[in-house]
Image (cartoon, rainbow, N blue to C red; front, top):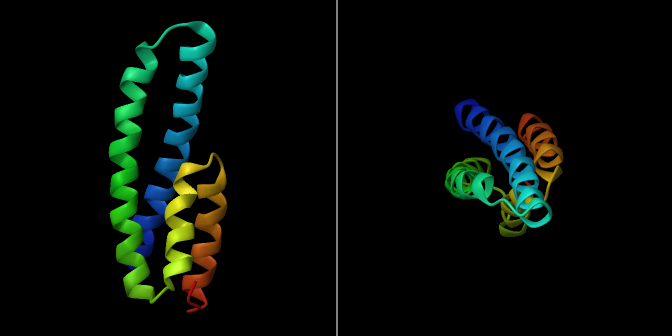
Length: 100
């Protein structure tokens, strides 16, 4: 399970940073009237988020999380800064062998 946890931790950080870049790109697009950054960051974040979903479901199955806990962790990648918080909680939960 440590491999699945390591993959999850890495992707949680990548998606968290990617989401912050996406918000920045959206601000540049709508406030600065320039959509070049959004054309690059948007699809990259979407692709990385899809990988995050697969890796999170893999960890959820191995750690036997509830459907609700899994859904909440999956949604954590859609709200800025929440993926960092969720990553900490997931690591704590997995290390204590507690289900979410």
